[in-house]
Structures are given as structure tokens and as C-alpha cells.
Length: 95
Image (cartoon, rainbow, N blue to C red; front, side):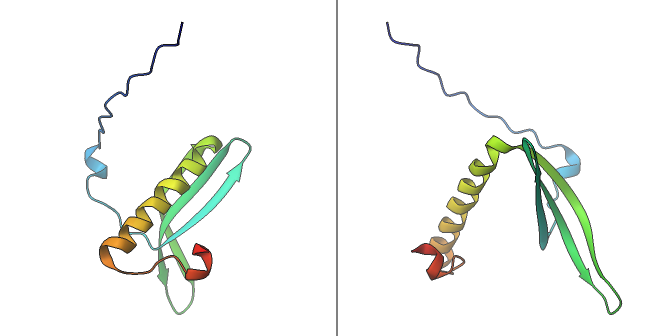
């Protein structure tokens, strides 16, 4: 007897009010430890005396989700390039 096929369940996103307004970031830092990856997203504020970054969000995810994030981001970049006719991925990387 074959195993039961898994039904695809509808995903319903719940965005809390404090996250409804997107935050602009222009820098990020990726780190990792055993079993997880951490991504800090921030806004770089250069000044004459210092280089400061305001970290606006810190995301920690299980290590087995990291490659799924990379695939989703790459897919979005390819879609962006097609729609806006703007090359983001250098040609030498696409080989």
C-alpha cells in the first residue's frame, strides 16, 4: 500500500502592525554557529569620524533552512533581472 500523499496546506501570513512599514537597509552581516545562521540587517550611516551601522533586525534560522533562503533569493534576483532588464548577477558568476 502506498503512503498517503501530503496535502499542500495554505500558508496564511500574519504581519504584526509594527512590521507593516518596511525598513530600508543597505548592509547586512551573516554569521553562523552549530545548527543555525544569523543575519543582521542594518542601515549604514557614514560620518567624518566614524562608520556606524544601526542594526534594524536580527534573524536566526536553523542551518537546514539556509540554502532554501539562498535559492529563494536567487530566484527573486533572476526574476528582477528579467522584469527590469538590469543585470545584478555578474556574467562570470552565471557560467
